[in-house]
Every structure is written in C-alpha cells, then in structure tokens.
Image (spheres, rainbow, N blue to C red):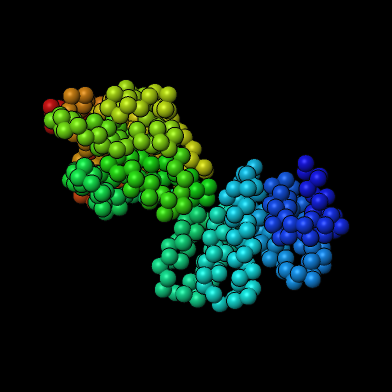
Amino acid sequence: MHEHWCKTLADPSFASRKFTQVGSSWINFCVVQAMMLCTKATLYQHLTSTSVRLQLLIHPWKMNLQPYTAIAPSLILSLVSHRRMDTGGPLLASVQALFHATQAISFKSNWSKGHFRLGEAQFALHDYPSAEKAYAKALEVSPEDATIKKQLTLTHEAISGFYFRQLLAGRDFCINPTNVIERQIFSSAQQMQNFVYLVGDAKTREAVVVDAAWDVKGIRAVLAADNMNLVGAVVSHYHFDHTGGTPPPPFDQLGIKVPGIRELAMEDKVPVYINKHDAQMVKKQNGVSLERMTLLEDSSVISIGSVKLHFIHTPGHTPGSQCIHIQGTEDILMSGDTLFIGSCGRLDLPDCDAQAMYTSLQKKLASLPSNTRVYPGHDYGGPFTTIAQERKQGLLKPMAEKEWLHRYRV
C-alpha cells in the first residue's frame, strides 16, 4: 500500500489521467495519503517533486500547487501528531483548510482572516510554531481583534506544553442557568465557592478535570473553547461538592442530583481517577461503577501527554483525600480540601481523622518545595498560596502532634 501511493504520486502519466477524471480532490487525497504513509524524510521530497510535476501537467487549468510545498512543514508535523487518523476525517479537513488558506493569502496578503484561517489549520495539525506566526500576522493586520488575541495566547501555551485552568463557580462556570433546578444548583455552587481545575498537555490538547461538579456542561464548554480534549476526571475526595451526585441530609430529600463525574464517566466515557479509600463512597453517591474508576494509592502517577500527575495520599478530611502534585516549569499542588490558605478541611465530619490530617500536613505537604504553588478546592481567602507561606503562618508551620490534637481533635 505504501509503495502504491508513493508511485502514484510520482507517476506523471497516472497523475494526468486521474486529474482529468476527478480534479483537485484527487490531489488532496494523494497528498494526505502520502502524509499518512510515507516517512518524514520522504514526505517532503514527494510534496515538492509532485507539486512541480502536477503544476506542469495541469497548467491549462491554471491551478497553483505551490502552496502544497509551502505547507509541507505542517504536514510533516501532522504525520507525527495524528499517525493513523482517518484520511476522510478531521485530518483531511485540516489539510484542505491549510491549502485553501494559503491560496487565499497568495491572492490577498493583507487579509487578516486568511492568516487567521491559516493559523487555525496549522493549530489543528499541531504545527504550533507556524500557527503562532500566522496568528501574529493576522493580529498585525487587525490589532484589536479579541478572537485572534485569544488564539495567539493558546498557541503560546501550546508551544510551552502545559495547560492549566482554575475555574471558579459563578465566574467561569455555573452561570446562565436554563431552568429552576439549575438555578438552585448554581446558587449553591457559588455559596460553596468551589474551584474546579483543568490540567493537561497543551501540545497534544489532552486534559483532565479535577473535582468536576455542579455544571458539567459549563466545564465542557471551557474545554471546547480552548480546543482541549477531555481524557479523564480526577477526584480529590468523595464529597458531593467535588464529585456531584447525592447531596448530604437534609438536602438529599429534595431529589436533586448534582451533575459531576457520573456524567463524565457515562457520557464522555472517560476514566475516573480516585484514591482507593474513597472509591466505595463515590460508587454509592454517584452511581459510578468500579469498572469506570482507576483506583490510586499514595505515590501513584498518571501521564496526560507529557504532563505527569503525582498523587499524594493525604487522609484526614476523608479517608481517601489526595493532592495532585505537578513538577515542571512551575511546581503546583492541587490540594482539594486538605490544605487551604491558613487552614485545612473540616475535621468534624463522621469519617474525618485529626491525627491523620496532622501527618498529611506536617509530614507530607510540609516537605514539598517551598516555591510550590498551592491551589485549594475552595476560594477561602484567595486563588492560591505557597508551601513557603503556609510554613510561615499556616498549618504547615511546625507544631507538635500533641498540640495539634489538643487544638483540632473534635
């Protein structure tokens, strides 16, 4: 199959016959087939040589194939990124868009929309450096265009490789309810001041959501606007305001189910990553089967593209509470309800454990690098703190276990 398409592209007489039969769609198809089947080394050679041969053959139709040579770097990158993607699907559409945008720019070089469309196609093919140049050119022509500015920001992020969003209920999601039940749920979410996090690989466009609850549709909308694909749901602990499902008494009598990880597991078919000690409660409250869960332990690691999520088991607030530590250009910790700014999660609930919380804070989290940014599960005093700050004047400040238990044991 590989040899067949390579020979097809290289054979002028066959190319001529096929072009007179089916026109430019055949050329599109052949170029995509070459991209899918050739090695990176031979791809550029085929694109350049075939462009010249076909240009000579179809001169009477005055069709310019030079753009195929110009877009070769994007096609080579897409070979690496998309591998064996169906040529009739998104990849083919992106290649065609790339070609059409390049043609449009050749006709009108100062048309910002042409450069923007080129950037979109290159972004879809994961050729982020080329997309950055195209968006920058579009912004140069239309410097006040907010859409271009956003896409250029996303492209800079894609080049860096790290995707991170902190979403606050009432600001970024849980807005514009469409019915009475949603209005009640959104209002409760705003009162609870929950944070939801999106984190992943900006190059591969893969992300997981941390503590998805209250407004699954709104969370999906943020991901879609950022051109990210959801590949998993991470749970910091089982409480309903972090997972959705059945709220605690007396609110369970209202018959309202809070959207959350159940919808993601059942509708989006993504795995749910949860500490093994909280799994049964999530199963009970959310109706998510154990088969849909990936059970984690202390020091478990999962990879989202090139981004590694390190899990720290931090019992205390619940038996299976866990924090997510990411080390890279910046050290960040998503702490759920284990650590807040100057405080920790509640210790007066039925399965809380003050002694376990002491160990989680004083022995585990206090040992993290000082510059680690801590992103908590609720907006209780601000969007983030640092390990250094909490060591200085928070609950990571050294304290004897006896004093801790005297102060916090309920």
